[in-house]
Amino acid sequence: MKYIALPDQKIRRLSFYLAMEEFIARHMEDHDYFFLWQVEPSVIFGRHQIAENEINLPYCRENNIQVYRRKSGGGCVYADRDNLMLSYVTRDDQVNVAFNNLMNMELLVLNKLGITAASTSRNDVMIGDKKVSGAACYCVNGRSIVHSTLLYDTNMQHMLQSITPSKEKMRAQGIESVRQRITLLKDYTQLSLEELKDFVRETLCTGEYRLTQEEVAEIERIEQSYLDADFLKLIV
Image (tube, rainbow, N blue to C red; front, side):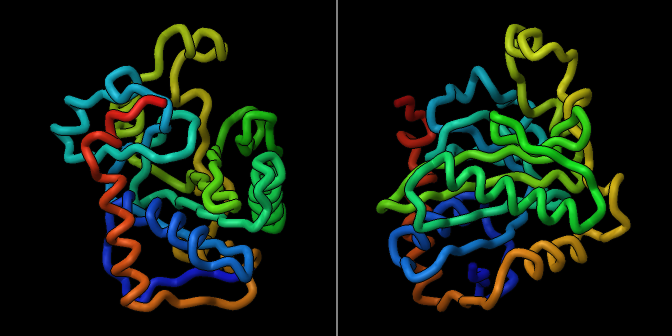
């Protein structure tokens, strides 16, 4: 599996990385590919969700937290530069297989760090009874795109206030708060976030492909579809 690198260190919007996944799926078919990314405070919600039902939009506006919709399903996620986002693009178009591949890769990384973890049927990675990673998947051009969080650290106040799952959903899961069901990877390793990024890449990838400026320009063109007002409101 090859690692996809950008030609610069520019800070980009979350929508750029969603477009980058799609570009890889549509134009790079020789290998499976993987990359890590971080964003400024953002909320990303699933294709089938109604933003107003899942996100505290006034809080996000007041705290400069950007809101984006992805093309995969699943729930709402808060992200910032203290946690990692993982993207995996595979030639396998069987969603369950793609999910399992990424979950197993994450478990391999954690195991090599000496952390006991397990995956669930809901495509989460758990340390004990607390969630440290979740994933979503969809298919493009006969290829599967799986994106996942790896919760190294986060602004807990923003996470708790920006996402508003229903009381019914919380009761159904037998929990009282988001805080009770998540854990932070920094509590289980002495690696810094930058060291963790290097460790993940070295564990999972062999070789690198560095995108050209022309390819970045094409990704930016695709990105516009994620910023379209109609897409942000889309319910399918």
